[in-house]
Length: 165
Image 1 (tube, rainbow, N blue to C red):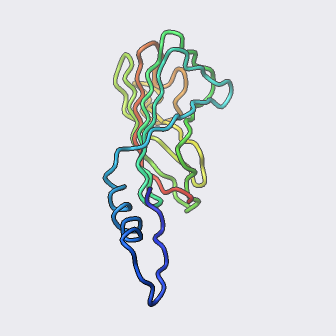
Image 2 (image 1 turned 90 degrees about the horizontal axis):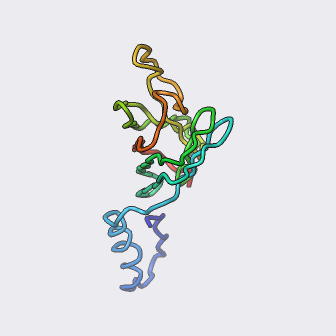
Image 3 (image 1 turned 30 degrees about the vertical axis):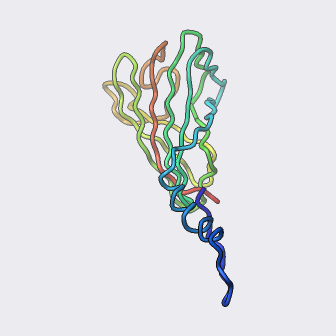
């Protein structure tokens, strides 16, 4: 809920309602529950289908700072498409000349640590993991990287970025 405060005018009589809106409500919004959103999972070649899996997102926006968490669990009817994966973020990223990096974890047959990446002005993020157990250079996540995805695999991504507005 946080937004730019109003501009006050010299000599203006301030009411309790204005103080509540401009100060109390803004302050309270920083301690409120996070807001849910529905991320969309796509791929660069053929889009995957979540099937009976779950994909949830939550965020807290304070000013233009957005703190976000995405949790995805693959289901028995999930299909994985082809190409590099992306997920929508709740607000477009600022075009501030910075790439925002967060954390990602894949819990499959093994536990993989990785990164999320949001480019300037982007509306999506990508996850990056080691290419394999022997090649630890990171690359885009896809249906077989860092391992072949299967039922009950869980992806957790947490990141902070600056929104465009």
